[in-house]
Image 1 (cartoon, protein in one colour):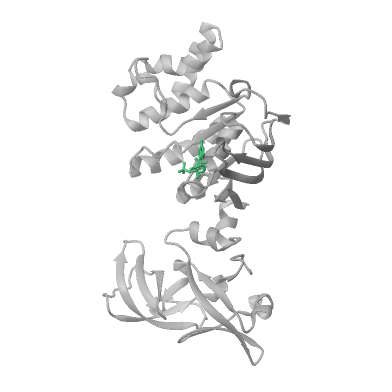
Image 2 (cartoon, helix red, strand yellow):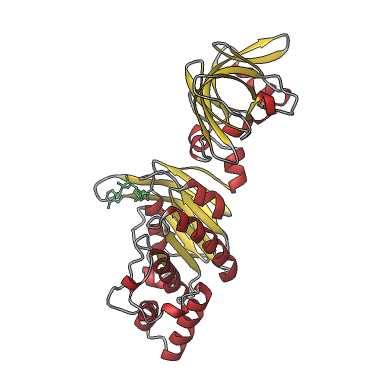
Length: 366
Ligand code: ATP
């Protein structure tokens, strides 16, 4: 079993900076967990504490049921793949991959078997005699992963391993790493600030901000049921739209208003909004839940007329940037929609997909 458990884990750097605050989460055996958040949120610090490269200021880290707080990195049965790959330039690829095993005094035949096996898994057998500078970025990245594979660790730790690759290669390596996870049957903890990487690869995402965990869930949950305004805005591109709207009640209906916009809240959400009558809430809706009325087939009547600021046809869909009641909104509409900047269009908002957040606490109401 290669479960990793963090219990009330804190990191306070020697200068007093509190980088990780009461982190609690579990990584199950064979799970692919992504630590996700903006720059400086504490995800690398968390990973480095699991690796043993950073002291833990408070709390407990367990790997495979054993408390590892005071155990040296080399004795934790983990392997880390760094952002810069950290390959030795003067060594061949073979020697780079064999290096860690040699240090551990692994027998030569065993090293040979493991290096060749890892090279085969990663399709880099033909590169073993080369030096790192004779390799492309993607190939170097594979070598860095290979060096971790030969160790046959309980847990793989990845620190933004794709950030030095160009966009196309990143997409390719993303699916390769996912396939590799299935093939190795390994536990993986992976740090990134790229929400698309997190959504496409993770079994479970741990979203952090300012040292605090904001939400833990699978990609579907964090996308469809964000806990708060931060998670709602961070996950998804283009980002969720937010509007401040006033909650009122009329003839037993709950109504949201903002300037000329009047939305009737679907029955399923009415109860949740009752305590907010007379107050403002943050209304949220994803771009794909706003339709060009001409191509809308549902039965909603929540129509809003708006002026197009910019239209971006992307082929499979068209993004429309519009201004409603002085607030900027993005709609992802049918690609058959053809409009120019300055033109008016009627949109339908699918309120079954709406979100609402408490204005003060920023927490999701539903
Ligand atoms: P990035 O995506 O930019 O790498 P991150 O989420 O991985 O960001 P960390 O590297 O974990 O962030 O850093 C978290 C916070 O701790 C940052 O504000 C950073 O400036 C601070 N920090 C990191 N290392 C130290 C250190 N040795 N001493 C003091 N503060 C530090």
